[in-house]
Length: 187
Image 1 (cartoon, helix red, strand yellow):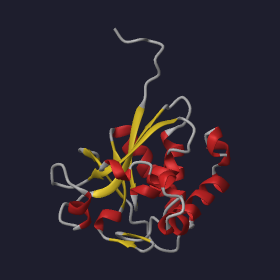
Image 2: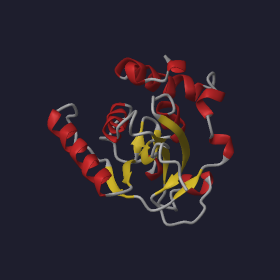
Image 3: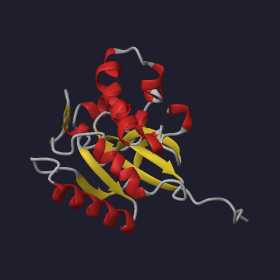
């Protein structure tokens, strides 16, 4: 029998460019219990990084965020998602180009779909971006974990040029806009 005091965890599946970036961002948020980099949204079973990079699988680089909804809401996770990438560039984030780098929210149920559509609509109406938002909002199907060497890439390779020039600015933006939402060890 399950412990009735055990908190119910939820999962969000998001794609906003390179999963090294998104993992580094979301693992720093209070209420997030785990972040897994991987592939989703395509048709090929058990793809590798090389398969996905070839753009022949239909998969996006994505993360699965396990979170405690008593600490952080799905809405706030979406706010972090929108603020830490450019949702107006089709199949591209910075110099990373290809369908695997598309912006997408893979909803797990009707409530997530409704919240994702509402947050996208709110962002569009805000006028923050002069170009249209191209983020896909699509049903979640299956997630394939990335290879082990992708796990905690940013924290394990802080002096790598990609980390310094691409991920560091995103982390600084996260710290500026979401400082109160950061876990203590990342403040």
